[in-house]
Length: 322
Ligand code: ATP
Ligand code: LTN
Image 1: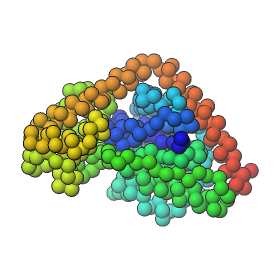
Image 2: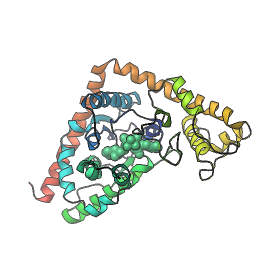
Image 3: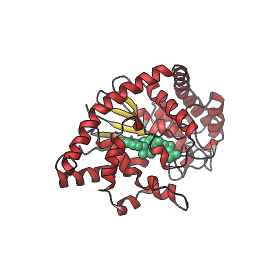
Image 4: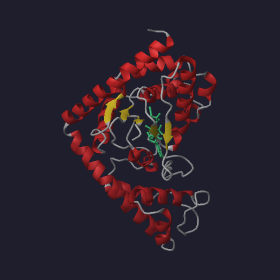
């Protein structure tokens, strides 16, 4: 069984793309770690009270998905080895390779107040992964480049200092790895999109979900068909529905082909509502029992530390700090 590590930022509210592209593919296997990467959330402006609340609600969601049993759920800043290894990797990463990261280019472009943290953040992500000697990193398509950088850094470290790190692979789903914005199907659905109608939140009510799907941008014509180049809006809705209900895209497209966009969207909305409702309700219930969340996070922190501490010591030995 492959060990996995993945992380999600407690920045804003979790959206459907996070669930379909990442969370849905996180398996509760022993030896796997799933992390609320709160230090990453400091790479862009934040509100302390909001961050504090989002750390809890994100942890509750991971617990609702069953990831606290079997695998481990913890908060990044509770295990200081992440920040410490990140410094060492900051001294091995190169300006050139970090400058090529498309996420930095898109989030930092044209902004005068871009933090140094946003630039070096892929090396903190590499530290997260490499501390746990995992084979797999289940992520959405947008994080593939960061996992590839992690591989490069691990190989560079191993060839200079000896075989310390396991070189991980990204695990990216075939369908749903890039869920697009409901308002602009040329852009990915994103937590940080200021337009609330661009994204479905896992905390959205049934009515809000219905409204957002019914007003999603579709394409010219009226035939329901899967064609991401010519019909990106309809194709995005087909991918969302197919991943959530398990029916192949072709079967869904065939069912709605001649029924028009209205009937198609009603069908998609029903599928999304049914998928989101149990998660929303479980998270709400868990949030009313903060002690249960604390217990899960404490167990996760202890398990994570048992791996991270000796790994950091091996790194320190290898580079000459010990
Ligand atoms: P933002 O876009 O505001 O920076 P985010 O929504 O991408 O944030 P992250 O915490 O950075 O959120 O991502 C958590 C996981 O969700 C990552 O594995 C990422 O690849 C995945 N993910 C995020 N958005 C999408 C999407 N639209 N489609 C598929 N996967 C996604
Ligand atoms: N950078 C990721 C979040 C993240 C992550 C990780 C994902 C931080 N550390 C380690 C996988 C493994 C993002 O989604 N923005």
